[in-house]
Image 1 (tube, chains in turn red, green):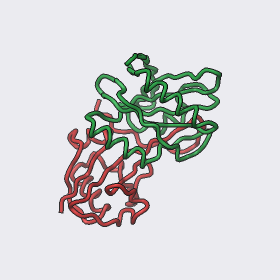
Image 2: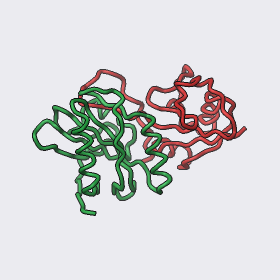
Image 3: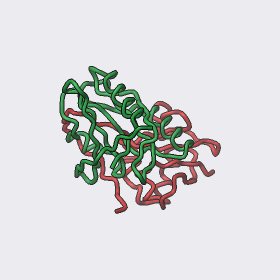
Image 4: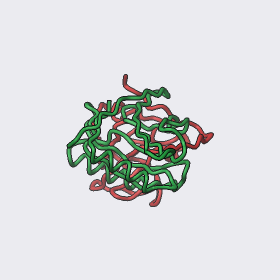
Length: 107
Length: 135
């Protein structure tokens, strides 16, 4: 069952430059798994190796943040739209934390 | 180079001042090819901190949809530094989400706000000119 997935600008180079792709899945986890399987360049940028959602992305099922639903177990239907957006954060304070993985700049 | 119109410039400054004592933040909508800012989207700072900012993801989603429906895209982010320079901090650099974006910093350290813009690519900071235009 194909589901529309909207990609942020930073991930589009790894998906042939398109804004929206259609992949199969009955849950958010399956949809993201299908996404990475079809576009291996996205590996590690949306879902961690342990299967959890990457901390530097936000995934929406229609208008809802999936972290407040059932996360990767959130069911999806073919009328739903999944949106992936990068977390946007920073600030003057120099926190000691791992940097986000560098976006694979096409240049 | 970033092209900024007066209304959006004043909107950015006002949002930053209005966020005190915390950092304020928002997104820039426009044309990614030319660097022209068409509109700005002040958002909530989810971190609610004087030292950190997190763009409210819900606000980001709304801004992204609005920009797309209007035929442009999110081309950058602005945020304030309440007590330091308008220069990207190590945190700003480490968490820069998109190498094609413009990163606008507004320093509120002194009496008059200072706005500067940067490109952050692979950890490297490059200041860019901000061209202020009347609309």
